[in-house]
Image (cartoon, rainbow over all chains, first blue to last red):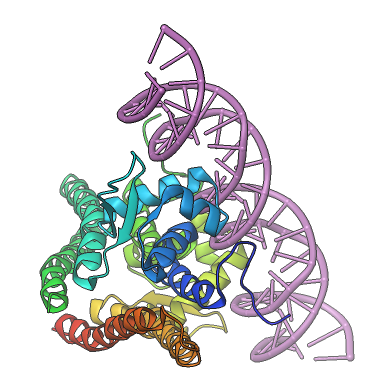
Length: 166
Length: 166
DNA sequence: AAGTTCATTCATTTTAAATTGAACATTAAT
DNA sequence: ATTAATGTTCAATTTAAAATGAATGAACTT
């Protein structure tokens, strides 16, 4: 009657709210909701959880859980816990902001920045190969400005990481 | 045969590539492609452009153009140019990174941060109202950590803006 | 005030992204 | 070697987001 939370499984109200908190967070970063759900549940759980735990408690598919865990591993946001028993793998969250941001920058930001710089280089060569185009000076100026943007980003990223690292 | 660019209108290859550059950029920020197209075309255009110019040159609908321009105005990424003639409004891009980032932080980042902090406060009160729950200490610790995250973000944002402001 | 020009809104359609789950590995136990 | 347990992949589906464009509104012109 009041909440917007889907409580089809045995999540407490508190757990559901924390999970919702992380869903909002990851959506702001352009990541799928399921990643927020998975990280969120790990974040509120004192014990490490297996893939099957995530599936049953969150009510998501095995596929989602598997893919979500992979993304989170790549981001460095979760780590495997030595599941002494059997071959089942248990996960726990990395809760250090420094590392979370570092992973995000490394996996999401830097690749985009790099591909942007490639494209920029191509654009610059296009301008160079323009004949006596009246606009080419204007174009060159605009591209130069873009180059300054990405240079600033490159300087800024380590500053951010350093700041968050304590 | 080779390119992925839709050239249904009179966009030069160069213009199309610049627009593609900005499409990638805004998608990284979680904004719709049309916003990248509009800003991109304004960015490569020496003269200010009207809504109808955007519609005809980009081949997008009036609705998209209108909504996209609104978002860009709200972000402070474009400004109206005093269209001396008639009542048609012409737009030009704001090309200062400082202001673009500032607008993005103000419009996109801060609201999310604020709503996150609200939710966090609610979660904290939920923990306080927990009876002698065995997990409440663990929960309190986790929430405290989240609070530190958002405090850091609040400190970091002005640093970023200051850095980009020269 | 009737017509014109230009911009916005919003219900519908389209497109893109995320999710699902059955089929396919992989590894371990017997 | 066979079965059981666990994890991954990917074509098909579902869901969410964005684009469309007809209807509407607002502002100007005559």
